Image (tube, rainbow, N blue to C red):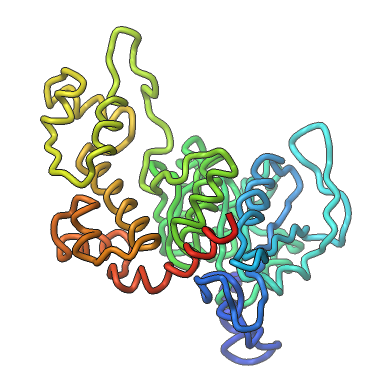
Length: 370
């Protein structure tokens, strides 16, 4: 039997149903219009699929994150709509209350991005990896080319629909082994906060959904817009998707020192050469002990962490200043434009010049509306 993804592909290929909206995401304030100023204003539409047994906290994440950004004229960059697989009405939560959802599955047909939060009542999805007829019919309304994202066990929906076959994905670390057994064609990585595979994104559980949604805002509109959303939400502006989901010893034993001082010291001098031994000296540790402790606390090596901080610094400078590419490379600690170009290409898939051209307007819009 064809998966939902196959049916969507066939629908677009053989023309048996209505074609996708000719405007598509490119005409809305999202991935197709990173400056947030489309020729005919129309915000990027995020549709959140609310399933019975949903977790209220995770349902609220897309509304909180996507509901904040606006363009220079104060117009929202996103429109967030919640829908159910049934006609409008109550949807059960895992708490002692239900919510009333005012849109049915038809809302999925107009989505530019669909987000599926976690649910504790997945039934045959969780037990057999099989969609119910009701859910399959709802997902069949999604237009080809729509961006898809899941939070925590919402990934079961995307997996059962066939969207993740042969692709990488993540979910809550406690559920990853079972998920892999149920969907052996998916490359499951339980050690990351989220995975961006282009048009399909998946996150680990609970707060990792915030990281995923901020990442999508950052991808759509740049770091300045995403950082403004994070500041208003009172959360860290950026946790890299490759960061570990959980750390076996998140807090060092009482007698042991941490690496916080070294990280603060490094952040204050990213423009200077920083050696591993310099960071270790800030904590009066040997390089070996410091490296082990650093990885325990952050989930990455000191070198990986430094590179990520420098990439973020370069992104900020490219968006918010008129510094030349050479000057940005110096200020962010890469030394040369060639080195920075290589690191940005590896991390973001674009050159410094292309990144500035894409996101500079979005940064100015945020500053103007702050």
